[in-house]
Image: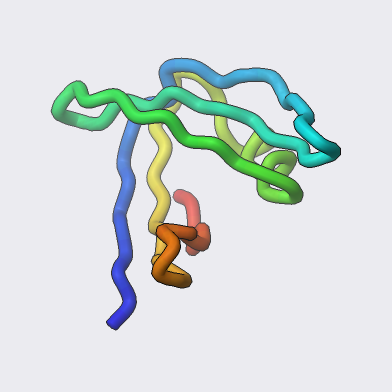
Length: 79
């Protein structure tokens, strides 16, 4: 059985693209409808595609799916 998460949130803060050990990444601070804040990090190729598709102050919606038992997730789609 695959677990999925439907995330709807407002982008409060969008960081700059950084690198660590040759791996690019970007951080985001999101806030859901209840006011809970969460941090999201996109790595590698997802760093650049996410950077182009998300803007501060805008609403963000996506679905994630669990791909293994180590809590790694795969981005399914963004609206």
